[in-house]
Length: 264
Image (tube, rainbow, N blue to C red; front, side, top):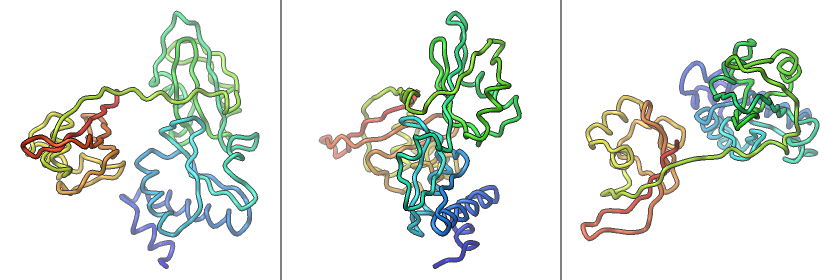
């Protein structure tokens, strides 16, 4: 078994990842040896993928939890034997749900809410998903910062807010919107799929991959010949994110049918 230092070095993408991965290993050990639940701060989908690969390698039990259905940002939770996932939704949950109401004739965006939270001095890793609706906004925080936000966040984007803490069970699920179209590829090679999904030439797709601008299932991929599995998520910096599904159809020229869901 690799040492902690070796594990961190093996899975970290950059030096910035190393403290987060080392902290995850410490929290996992604490949960199992001291019987105390322990959770990370919020991680991006990309960092979640890195963390999961490392934790799966050492067979450490963990849960990803974002407080809402379909959460994009999540914390990694390590629970001792006496606790299960239902503990995460209870009163002792490491996360807190906030509802911010505002006048229905005013408009707010995700950026407005996040900007206001950052303006209070919070770090991005203290804030989970933000869901903006007509007249109200829901967002998830680390429980430890919730009292400070409730006391000090009074507006966003020059719009007055009325905040209250709500149970996580009252938060709406994250709505995922996408546009769907069908295309075909010679094979499920990454460069060919990227070209089809983003309407690029094969050479342009290969160049993007070579320059580290393409992620496959939230992990940077520099191999154009990497096989894309049905259901995989592909992100291209500056162009967006898609999910690719095989349709099971083949053209007379032998091209494979794919369905591309582009997130909007």
